[in-house]
Image (cartoon, rainbow, N blue to C red; front, side, top):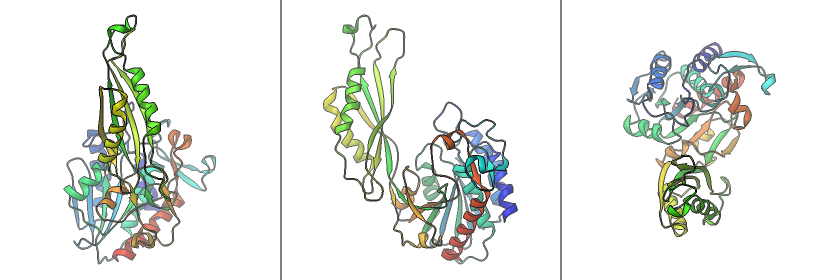
Length: 373
């Protein structure tokens, strides 16, 4: 299994599945991503000889191992790499000594190694080592690249994947992530009237009211903090004017607010709360719901957690895809090799420990056999 895992990981890291430079997302059905999935990932799955393979037009893959039932395990992997954006020669996959990066032993270095491709290689190795199954194990490839639940919806709804438990293979430092906050991008548009900046009285400058809108977020009513997931927050993280022209007042200011959601909160209701709070600030204000992800929370004694054989547990700071499975009644956790520090190191360079990938493969195989063997 070790040689197979190493070869697969180098192949995956050497395949460009990154968000294009200058963009913050990659759209479903992107031709480059489709090519990578079809020429690299699909053959790896076909070689595992699943009972069936279902494919979505946007590139997502669902492969069933074992009988066709609805009480099995969903083992979900991700192909889009969103970190390591500042790496030099990001897709020259190589094995190097991990000591300079604070990792023990040999590591695979290259974009996506830490975020998604180390976990994907571990999942492929785990499924390859499965024997007879009395319940299905679904190995899926999620092509989502917009920080939304779009890929999971395509897999569970369009491709009709059914499962009783789910593990999302993602970098968690070999800890089981039991939950995370959700999020919704609240899109705020402040309207004004453009004019030359030498005669501001001929227009209506939207920048001062937009600044007041941002300041008003400090008094937005929010629910009490969750004892394990932390606080609900409303953080403005984008602010831009339109049009941009010499000595010209803009006619519009756009503000995007990251509203973090706690269990029980819905994106639409949270957006309505922001709208009702901000509308008194400026008469020409538009507040709309943007892309969102739901909160996730799984109990520590859930079967899927226990099947991971005593791996330490944690709660994630970032929003992620587990919330969708949880919203469908499927206890969904995250687990895999790869560091959780989203600071300078992961942004600038990605690497994953081969030993950790092998530990993850053994843990995922053990969980699959315990739940479905």
